[in-house]
Image (cartoon, rainbow, N blue to C red; front, side, top):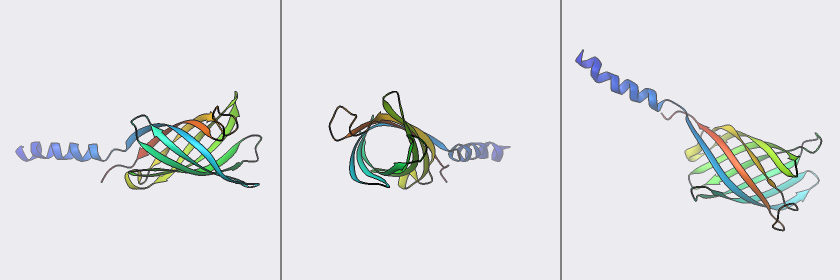
Length: 146
């Protein structure tokens, strides 16, 4: 009986550490088009999280062939790792909106999955000439820690 009572905390601790971690990252993104071609655009940006963390975003975006929709692939880089996410966006009520599908990550975000969304104004529509201004939310699911 004594051995069973001693084993219970170990089992409970291992079950708790085996659960996936959910993390919501909210940030502002300021973007600048680096290069454009008929195939799409390479864009770079700087992110500012609510907790003061600064990062970058590098992405390629192109028309999807479906009306005004566009698609792309993003890599967010933070001090503790990266998150790579595919996205789809479209114009809505004078703004651009869209969704993310997180593909993978490195460092603290290794094995990341999840989704998210964005809303904002691209270059040419924002109040600041030459840059896009966006609100970003990433809903990150991290695999259980081993």
